[in-house]
Image (cartoon, rainbow, N blue to C red):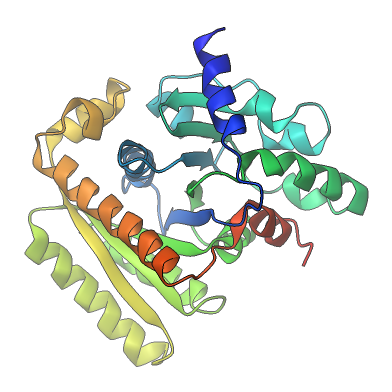
Length: 289
């Protein structure tokens, strides 16, 4: 049996009979170039190394960032499943133990599928993924309608920004838009000199949001990630910084962010709070409420 076949078998064979335990986390940004895809890939990897079963989906398929980052090639994506041209088991790409790439679609084409029969078949197919603990979604940048579709459907939304003034302004604009569809938003400030700088940027955004959006919004700083030339180099070399350069500062920072996500999920499990699950996520995504 090939390595890929074994990887898929590990995902399918461990399916939970009742499902509904997957935490769907959408990672987004107000503008491109803030390291969103790098963070998504490394957070997913760290969670998988902690024993969580993690799927990572590229919802900005035109850029194929995750394909490049994981040094794999995805021939088909979720759109092919919707069209009945492939099954989920055929499109999933095993990456590491406990980690699978689910090639996504930017959303424009997905929006065209509202036929109940097609959606029903798609949701049956999606049951393959019900054993995942996390589904990390790397969305496109900006506040377009299709990106909002993913943000609305996810359990958690993480907005990534960097110290650049334009990026901070765009991050606030993103928070403002997202606040209209959900009242809890997490943030990660990337490429900072130190944690103090990241905290200061977050405090600024939080203060402006509090004054203009209102008290209903809960903004949470999930973590800050230091800048390092090795991170940019790791992207060009198609390696994960948390795998190949685990001893550098940014790798530790990303691990701390992932640990936060993992502990929040475990805490909810201890409290008996159910996650939405894959089925509910895709129902929201496809507008089948």
